[in-house]
Length: 414
Image 1: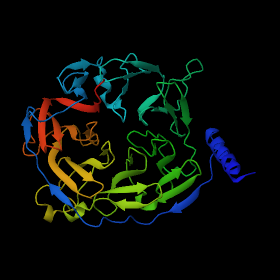
Image 2 (image 1 turned 45 degrees about the vertical axis):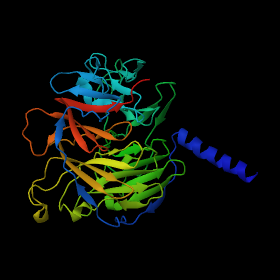
Image 3 (image 1 turned 90 degrees about the vertical axis):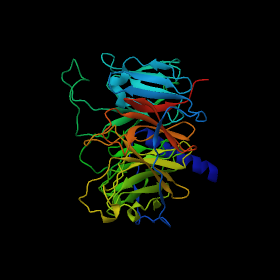
Image 4 (image 1 turned 135 degrees about the vertical axis):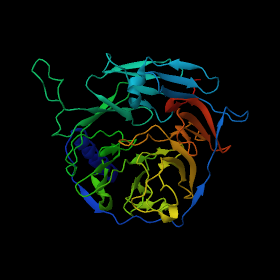
């Protein structure tokens, strides 16, 4: 048999094993501590919030917004201000997801239509509907595929085998579905080293397992730490130093690396892991803010160069901070992964509470702006929240609404 034929034959065996649900053997590699950035870089550029758009600020495309005061969700055209209401879907605002390319919004319809999922374009047209009763929508895996969690239910009776409490003694599988073609694939978590007792695996945003956009790799919590698994050959990189992490790994748009925050150095920093198992500490904020905290949910810019995140710093004088000192509300910060520069814009997010983390910052499709619900740090007691657009070209923050929660930013339909 020629080498090429032998290679294709072996690949076929591996793919067959994956599709049949059999578990591939683990080839384990343990990694060393992360390399640190060459130098520390931080800029504090505190932006004042202005009202109304300046003439030369061009915000485009369509925002997905939820009302703070009513159970409604809207599409707002940023060019002309027109809005389209999305059938009172605001009651499920935490489960509305925009595809990475900004073309589609997916969400489960509210009661009594639970189990029906809608995919809609930014113009409110081109509506597609799915019926996946009993499944939980997780997010878009990529521009064409949605991910659903398949709960394992305990039957309440033979006549009604689906409803009932979820069985927490087994790991659930995931369903990857292309809503445009109907093609689907089930992903059972056949990883023998899954190492945490709560067998819930919510995926969004992270409860121990998340797949890369091309489904070639999986990052998960294992018995030895945080693990990165190649799904083709079973090779696993294990990062034992992140064993107790609530990492919320965020894959880059091209699936070549992922980032997360962690405090293994007694200070929250952002770390990167690539597909070869190399770990790099991307920030060194401890040089500026001892005992800071980075909430774990962050957002890649569309081009995969910048990472927007929330930064909590000690209140008062950072140079004299102690481990028990109160922290500020989460502030918008952006990391340039090419230069290592972190810019702190001193804009505090308000849509969060002490029992949950704020959602990640939302980028415009062209990567020049971010939308957030917040207020100026100098006015923390303002009674109404502010919908704020941060423009990185003009270096301004503009209030464009009140009491509205941003859920996504879509490309305007042609």
